Image (tube, rainbow, N blue to C red):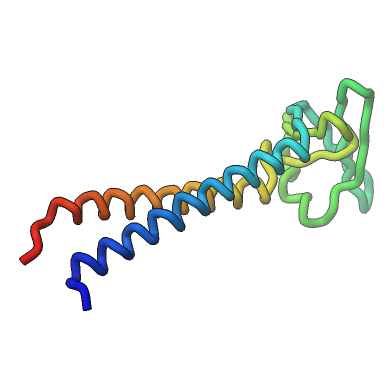
Length: 134
């Protein structure tokens, strides 16, 4: 059976490879997702409140677009005068209220978490090399 430092060194190396490898996979998936999703362009939007419906109207390079807001999107437009939305360059009829989607945010967060784990484990494994065995 190995000493504590040997086991800690092996675990640190294992977490280094797993953390850095998973970070690379997450960032590659993020790159592919952004390439497939296309570019989102920021524009101004106008909110039209008619009796039971709330409509969103915006202008793109392809012309004027309009759509109904779903009930869970209505909190974005409550009392907003200068509303900024993002429309898809390839399909200007699709909009969202944030520059990046939930999938992009999740992959970015996971990538940085795994990168942090990998770098921390790398530092620990390097420090363990210089600790003398008792």
